[in-house]
Length: 139
Image (cartoon, rainbow, N blue to C red; front, side, top):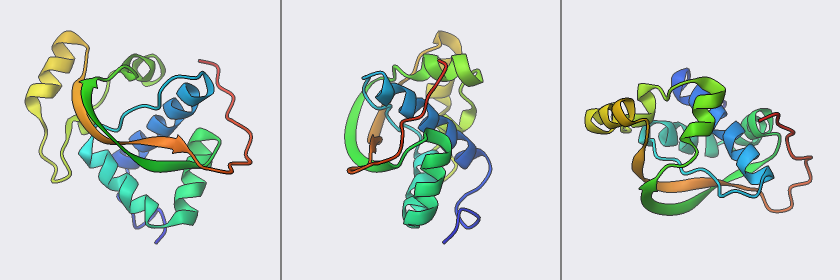
């Protein structure tokens, strides 16, 4: 499978932004960001099925290999402000389930209050034995 057979467009664009934020958080000793969008996570799972494509995508966006790790929880999503500084407001896809249904209540809360409280099941982590130079960021 290549990235061409994985969901394209918005999901992969947002996954790339998420990986960039992950690299910055890892570089600065912060916790890895939580993947709270089922739609974007579905694209990530499809990408993971092709290790070479996943590695290339991670290196392109995070400057390193990343792994997909189970990490469940429900809480305030603290990395949203970093996303907004770099890319603007979160688009609707972040509040979309794997079947394409938008959680309109969560989206409305975000648009009204500027905060995200969500459940997640995974996060990125640096790959063991990663010999790549960490990405340098200007954030």
